[in-house]
Amino acid sequence: MGKTYERIDGRLRTFIEEQPLFFTATAPLSGDGTVNLSPKGLKGSFAVLDEHTVAYLDFAGSTAETVAHLRENGRITLMWCAFQGPPNIVRVHGRGEPVFRDDPRFRDLLTHFPDIDASRHGLRAVIVVHAELVRDSCGYAVPYMAYEEDRDLHGRRFAREDDASLDAYFTKKEHIATSLDGLPGLPLPLPPSTV
Image: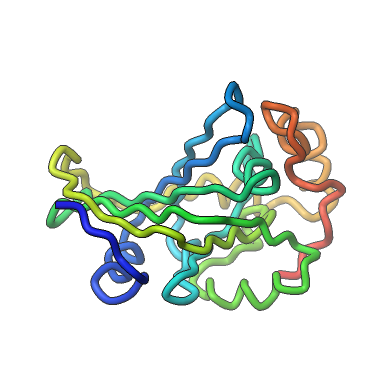
């Protein structure tokens, strides 16, 4: 059944890198704050940086809850489920941080994502997660589902934006600069793109 791992390597690394979908969960410190759970996809937007660190690209969306929660307290859990092959669920519990476009580390982090054109998706940040607890479990109740392909809608929608129009889009959205619970979200104005 469930097992705890010291690092993300071998079979475990292969499993999470092969999944086309994963989920992120964050929450504010406030006991009555809004817990956020988000699906993440787009092939090439996730990377294992080393045995204790993973990262994913944070693209344009209608809110910035994950960014806000990470800025407040850093807590995050990532989860992958096997929808094909042997049943398996992997969770990485850790501390995360959004690395924004004006951070000196940003350009170097982007080199870990060579298989995706991040400029087409309204890239806001790279989310870096340092694993504190890595566990798997059986996944016996997870159904079989077939992955067909990524949707092209996100790329088609945001490929037509430049820095100015993307900043305008974020500025008019109610929960981008400030979370649902009033926490600081994405810093605006949006720094110029370096991709």
